[in-house]
Amino acid sequence: MSYVGPDFDPPQPRRPRRGPLTVALAALVPGALLGWVVYQTVGGGDGASAAPAPRGSAASPAPSTRSASPADDGEQHSGATPAAGSLQGKVVVVDPGHNPGNFQHTTEINQKVDIGTNWKECDTTGTSTNDGYTEARFTLDVAHRLRTLLEAQGATVKLTRDGDSPAWGPCVDERARIGNAAHADAAISIHADGSAEGNRGFHVILPGSVHAGAADTRPIVDPSHDLGTRIAGTFLRDTGEPPSNYLGEGTGLVTRTDLGGLNLSTVPKVFIECGNMRDSKDAALLTSGAWRQKAAQGISEGIVSFLRES
Image (cartoon, rainbow, N blue to C red; front, side, top):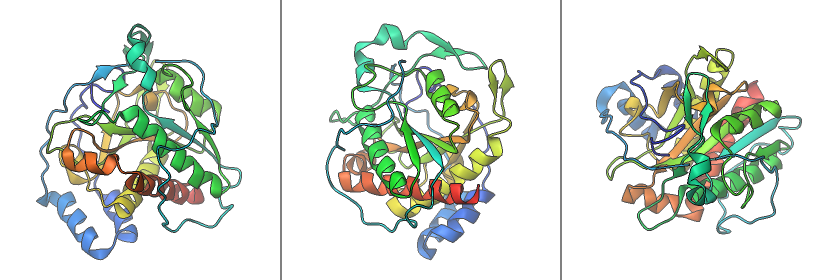
C-alpha cells in the first residue's frame, strides 16, 4: 500500500506504543529473534522514517463472501494451527486491499468519499513488484489462504472482495461498512507497501482515536491495539519478516487517523503491510507461494489468539 489516494496519504508523525509488542513477542518469538526485536524496539535499529514512493489511485460495489477461485499456487505451509472448532460463532472480515480492475476505473475510484475526518478518493490502484506482480493479486491470494485457515477453526469468514467481483473497489468507506454490517469480531485489511528499495519489513496499522463526523473509533482503539499487537507477534514469528525499518521505529506498529477503513469501523480492525513490494528482498518473499502461506498462518494465529481472549 503506498501513500497516494484515499487511505494512503503519508502517515502523520506519531510515536507508536512500544511495550505491548515487546510483551507479545516475548511469548511468541524464539529467544534469539526476540533479542533482535527488543534491540530494535528500544532504539538499536534503524528508526529512520523514509518517505514512501508514490502510487496510483483507486473503488465500490457490494462484496462477495465466498469464491471457489483457487489461490495463486498450491504451495502450503504446515505450521501448527489451533484446535479445530475453537472459533465457532466468531465472524472475521478479511479485506484484500485494492482490486485489479481499479486500473480500468480511474474515474470511479477517484471519486471522493466521506471518511469522517475529511473526504478522500474512493480507493487506489495499489502497487506492484518491479516485475509486475500486483498488490491486488497478492492480497487476494493471502486472503484466500487466511480464510481457509480460519474456517478450519470454525470461524465464519467474509471477504470484502473476491475473485473478479466487483469489477472495481469497493470504496474504503464501503469496506469498513462490510465489517460493521457483519458485526465482525475482528477485521483485517491486507496490503503490501510501495516504498523505496532498501525500505523493508512489515508493519501493522492501528486506528488512532477519532471522533469527528461519521467517525468514532474510541470504542475500538483498545481492542484493535490488542488485535494488532498479537498479529505483529505471530506474523514475525511465522514469516521471519522483520518489523519495518522505515516506519514504526522498529516496533512493527504504526497508529494512524487518516484511513477511512479504520476511521469508519465499529468493530476491532487493523491493517497489515506485509512487506515492501519495491524492495528486492521483500519482493522475493511476497512472490513466493510458500511464504504467502506463512504470512496467512501468522495473521491467522494472531486473530485466533485475539478471539480466544475476547
